Image (cartoon, rainbow, N blue to C red):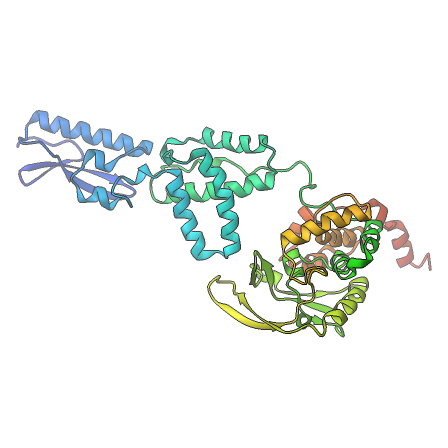
Length: 404
């Protein structure tokens, strides 16, 4: 055959073949069904290659449709078809499988729950057929349903993971999620709605028959642990002489685990009201039987055994608390106390707010809460409580010696 062949068209022995770049790799494929090499077949090869290049650029190239007998068609797909036929449902399954190997079971349970929203919306649709506006509209619809911004952002953790996988696998040329931001909140009410000191007193005195339970809640208003850290505390974690509590584990969805961030593995200094309550709590739990538990380590694979005496159990059932049972009891308890409803997690926010309202250095508050820096404290946890805020002018006057 005389004459120069078009770019990407070449001879392989006596057969025409084309080459093209897919996902950064060069592929060569013979033209099936072409018996003779002439001007017409060369033009056909050139047009076919141009079509393939356009489809690759637009993210809709189907290898098996162009080369059904090529062994590469199966190689480029996990199911025997082209990879770009991956549906959102299949993408979710792939992403969750990786998370199961890398994340704690409790985290995966949350992911699975949130992924239902994504599956219900897009399910069987191919990822390549869903554009940016489809995804942005989905985000808006979730908000319109009344879901909190944090919940919507949690759902989009799955969306971002699925689309990032598709982009990384070469199914998508661009990742539309790069141009879709998480939902912001106009207020911080989603994060912090702390109790005032008057409300803490009402909560502590509301039901004398549940004294051990109310003592736990009052303690945490002055200690600032997360609920999962609080309900996993044991006698062995407390040093009454030093006035400290060691946070070594958390109880999440029935599983004991070390805190996922290293900063959360910490020593909490107890201020006077917390220390006074902790003395009573330890005295009540000192004769509790030892229990051997397994604590999942940070790699989410290995575990270590510990023998502990737990500090907190429901005073009615005798069982360890969990998020559901604690929230149910606390809802009823607030009604008895005549205090506006909030979740028990607000005890942690109460501690931060009370400290900041008293001008305690934010760095110390951050360390107590287990944050590596002050960003989270400033953004989420501290809400000024006007009724509990001391006069800054009065404090400065005292420091300068003008007041006794």
